Structures are given as structure tokens and as C-alpha cells.
Image (cartoon, rainbow, N blue to C red; front, side, top):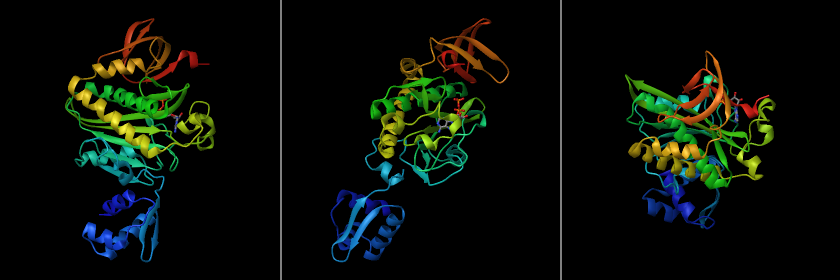
Length: 325
Ligand code: ADP
């Protein structure tokens, strides 16, 4: 009902609508209307209330509220159900808990701040309040576990496309999970999965996108390798609009994946990557390999020509040799 009140106010944005009219249109009492208005004001909506004239929505808060994201959202699955936190440990952790309890595909957990945002291998992901896009998407693809790495690549293509189409910046993908603009990381992706035998039960795709962070929001030690859309564009962007765009791109690619498998996504990935054709060094947990990155496989593995022969990697740390030293 709160969302319905907001919907009408949004429709009349900048003009007054009386409490009487709201209560009649929604079939609730004027006191109930007033209570919803109070809640909205507490959430940061600037709503002017005047005795006789009624209510007027003047400003919406810069938060990734479900009501904001859903207004004007074109998807039918991704982001239709959103759980929002001002502060959370890690959105991936919450999303996994929800998935365990049977939460449906397309559900998104989103937070203004993560206190324990994670990268791969338990590394810390900086997620300051109100500045970034820290979200996790629950998926239930009906695929075998070996198709799971391709979901990370799918997510990377979705983010790169959203950045390109929304900001006009050239976003490139560094295998497997980083999005770079002008050689610096603007986004990281962390995919986690649960499988039953060889079949995927759910996948949680965590996306950490540096939208409106400023230089001082990054710890000093990562300032030379991390950046944000705000820094790149020299202006603040609308996180709400970008997230809607991201959901749209993600859903199109996910539908394509379900219908035709990874192959069409693989072609797009190859068009947007910065890893193939480069001398790379791959650090697995047990060894370090050097060689030329030549391709990705039909299931998202990185093919590298090393001195020991051709090797395929599904994880591990990749450094582009030209960025070394
Ligand atoms: P990679 O795949 O590049 O090895 P991860 O995906 O594991 O890295 O992400 C964690 C690393 O990313 C951290 O160790 C840190 O160097 C860097 N990092 C942490 N927070 C951010 C951020 N908000 N933006 C860009 N890079 C970050």
C-alpha cells in the first residue's frame, strides 16, 4: 500500500494531491494515508504536507529502494523481487540464505553498504555507503555444474553492456570477473553456487559496481587500480537508472543463455574482452603458469598456450603481462 501511495504521488510529482483523494483512490482511511506518508518521509522522501492542499512529492532519496527500482523496470524476472538493506554484511551471504529457503529466481539482494563485502578467495571488497551498486542475484538455471563458470562471464557481459549503453564508456572484461575502464577496475563479480549431485540448485551472482565513489572513498592501496563511473565521467550518475538498465541487459542475456546456451554469449564476451591475445600469468592455488591467452572454451574456461602445452583454466588469478612490473 505504501508503494501505491508513492506511485500516485510520483504521478503528480511537484503538485499537490489531497489526502481525501488518496484515501478514496486507494480505499483506505485518511489516517492510513498519513501513516504511509510518514514512513516515506522517514525513508528520505521529501513530501510536503499542507492543511487543505494535501501532499506533494518534491524529492526522492538517492537510495536503491525497491519501489524506485521497480517503477519503470522492464524485466519480468530479474529484479521483480528486491530485498533492500541500508547496511548488510555481504549481499551474497544474504542471497545464499534466501536461496536456501527457496526464494525464487530473479530475486535481488541490494545494499547501500556492505561491511564484509567479499571478492574471490575471501578478499575484501570495499563497499561504502550510498555510493556503489552492491547487489546479488539469485538464479536457478537448469544446467549441470560445469556450466556455472559461464554465468560469471554472462554477468560480466551484462555489466559491460550496461556501462557502455548507460555511460557511453568502453568497458572491457578481464577474465574471468573484472570489468575495466581505461585499465582500471570499476566492477567485480563473485559467483557462488550450490549443486546437488551434478546439477545446479542455485547460483548467486554478486556484482560490485563502483558507481559514485570518489577517489577518497577507495583505500589508498587500491587507488592506482580501481576507479568509478563518477570519476571517469566527472559527474554523479543515477544509480537507480543504471541498476534498471543492468537488470534489463542481464535478463536478455540470461534468456539467450537458457534458449541457446553459452555460445552466443561467448561471442559477445570475446568482443568485449581485454585478456585474449595477451601474454598472461595465471596463478592457481598450486602453481604459476605463463603464456598466451588464446581463447575461451564452450564452458567459459580460459585457454592459454604455455611452455608445458595448452592449458584450460577455470579459476585462478590472471595478470596481464603488460600490466606487470
Ligand atoms: P581479482 O579478481 O582482481 O583478483 P577480486 O575479484 O577477488 O579481485 O576482488 C578483490 C580485490 O579487488 C581486492 O583485493 C582489492 O585489491 C580490489 N578491490 C576491493 N574493493 C574494490 C572496489 N570497490 N573497486 C575496485 N577494486 C576493489
